Image (cartoon, rainbow, N blue to C red; front, side, top):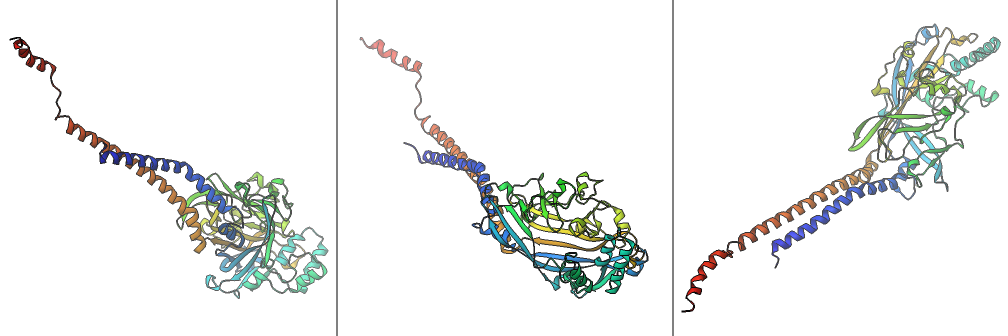
Length: 498
């Protein structure tokens, strides 16, 4: 009969084998389980509360910080001296984004318009919206450059119109008015007699058309048929490509709408997105790994070629006419106004740009843009998009308001749009898509370890059981020597006949 130790050894061996097999199976099955969970959580599907809510309403804090380049020497600039600026800001606005007119289509795409609203946050700002700053007057200096090639008589007429409405080369106004609009008799005159000439139909301001506006009609893939396409733009305002630029490549609408990306990223991945405000698609590249609030992330940044001119980076030739590297002319999508976008303080730009403006001090920490993204899901954890708006100004013959202004790309403002996942959304995200996969990973190793320990225990029990049996039965039943037995029986046989 089997002893208790024998039965225990068999039990341990069976249990250990089962647990070991389960652990090994989990090694191969776990990635499939996790990938399936990720796919279900990142596709655009109203049945999924987590991802759909994040996509539709963006329930995380999102802020826009505005920095003005306050001109300290406007009179000297009119006489041809270099502008001297000081940075004023941030003036911070809480940004609310919500998608509306959401329509799902049979080809696994969804259309929507995303509306934006801004509310000033005083306790996060350096001052109030009543702070006064001085910046270039776009209505005067922008129009002057636009009319440079027109006749001298027409330029003089326009100059007299500026004088009649008391418009000068520089504006000194409160931040709130420069941002969201101020009353201008010149704007009212132009809208009455030249409708459509200006983007503003009422007050004129740098962001007058932004508040309570939308970014156009986007149609993006839901990912329900192919997760590799989720969030990628199919159409924008009914267009597959733009018409602002000179080459097909520059006019392409690439990537996503800039809020989420397809999952399963690697260090070779890039982040492409289309920005209606920049009138182009952009592409960020991998920089380094990191961790944010316990969540592993990849940091993606703008390459040095993002705003390079066509001479330094041939694919950007379509964005020309170009000036120095580091700035991009967006006049073709801004009613031909001589407007440029760049990194703040001309970071990553040609040093010549900073030679013509005093008071600039670029750095990567303050002025480089980045996106920290969870590579497994394609969900951004921390976003900081920083861009600068500049105006090309110069003295134009016939328009006396321009005085002797030297030719310069003049920074006006730079802004940072920043958001990060926090609160209940972060907790839910961490639990479902970070913690659970980690637990499953540890479980598989624990099962393998327990299985091996059980098998080892069974082997030890078998060894001791065999050793005990050998000691118990071996010495008590010795095997007789055949030779000795034969010697002892011989005398009996010899005396038998007597």
